[in-house]
Image (cartoon, rainbow, N blue to C red):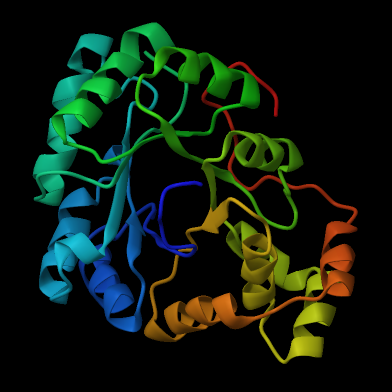
Length: 269
């Protein structure tokens, strides 16, 4: 079985106003979220950590994830251990629950970079190791090198980008596929099939999109939200049960759209 993590977590990426994530994380934990996802390059780990401390929720009750290695951050592979320590320092924690390689790009070479993640796992700096934005082939290359078991792979996924191949790989090898941008930056809200299913269930298109993800084995999601209302609505998607007709209607959407440009590597996927 995959590791035990909440099926819905809080994504924290933003282009600006990084300070907001102290309040946002505190609010999300108050509403009931128990997984928070950040990254070195988001520039908000300090604020995410402060929100966790201000929340009053015990650290051990929150599944905390971060990522390092993205483009040339850090600038060379021998500095990856220091970058991992920097993530922990900014978050103000001794360990994270999940540490991802952010993209297989820049300085990333599996034989040079991944031993630092094994070291972090063995030393207790992270409880689990993950990958992000990898293809199935690159995941296989990485797991051939990693001694630590692969706990999760994070990728863009939503009804407009269903990622069947990545889902099948996660299910076959029994790790989590964690969907970021699960609402396609709001573009799913205007999709007729999703709006029809939402009307049928007296739910929002956002809730339908999240429920569609959660109907899949080995899939979790980390929607971003900054208001208490939207956070609570997202969590309520866990209780929305879609029937097979609903799932078939969403699966039949004849449009594929990626909202995050994968310009960090030479592949097309």
